[in-house]
Image (cartoon, rainbow, N blue to C red; front, side):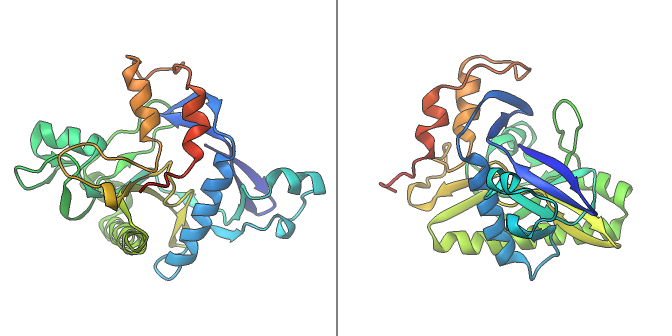
Length: 266
């Protein structure tokens, strides 16, 4: 969950400690969450900058204009000064494994967003190649999956195909880097905008809020996976019988604080 401010001709993106699930903001916060998300986005932007332009100007609060010393203290580690791009009205979900809503769709019709997949795949199976499964960018309610043809009608075929290529390229590059550290990136959500006629990667990038990270050591197709993301929050909420409408059930303290610790046995 991020707060967005105008700062001169630029935007100030501030990552809060709030957490959401199924497009509903929970009442509790996870201490330090925004700092972790900002650091991870900063990390990945350094490593994929050669593939696509991105929003980042700086994450150093001392270089951000107009901030008082108190502002700098409060925002240090969780703020990013950004170029102001015009967002495209879609979210670009890239999947390398069959999980989450993609697994649900596959069980229903053997496809995701109209992309037919091989028969007989099991939950968490690796896909033959990464695929783009875009969604709407709803201002209220839930984002909904859409076929790629919706992007071509809205954005034009050349632009839509270029964005698909960029999204998959970033995913593949990040997956190779993560694999060296023993992490599988099952899927992730990117957002793109346009500045001066060119595509730009915006918002958070490859964080636990926008991605599924699995420890490779514990990976086993045919079941749900141990994960370094907020899937455990979704699982808890669903276990309560919640109907995915506000307000969300309370999140136990263990889910807000204990989960910040890194599993040392993996």
